[in-house]
Length: 165
Image 1 (cartoon, one colour):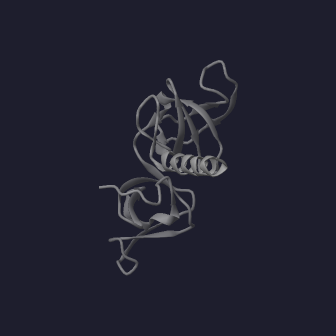
Image 2 (cartoon, one colour):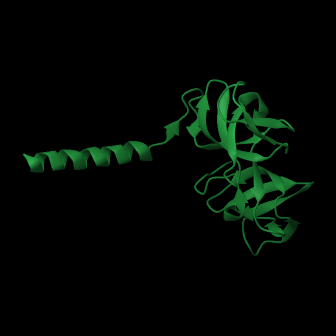
């Protein structure tokens, strides 16, 4: 009898792991969670909870900044920035336009997704760039009139396994 309970517990553990490994979807939008977005507004209040009655903990002040949505509740999205700081933001302050944060000072970008390709620009640490196509380990980015391909691991705001066309 104890062996049967042990087997049932093991099967339940495996099933739970499989469900957790499956892609989680937001209950409001049915979009994947977590997912990346950007700040549409130049200023956005970040609250402790999903309503106007919750206290404002701080204010995001950078239009275009990439953010990761980790939860949804009505018109509210729980977001976090590169440093893990975040809270609840009204969805109207967010945009589906994808941006990334440069994570290496003077990051060189190339004409093609290849380190031997000509360098087209260098971006400073902390620059917010528009995200274009992404392959397995490279993404096309643009900022300040310059564009090129950068190693995905040097960008924040794109998932390691994300592909974009």
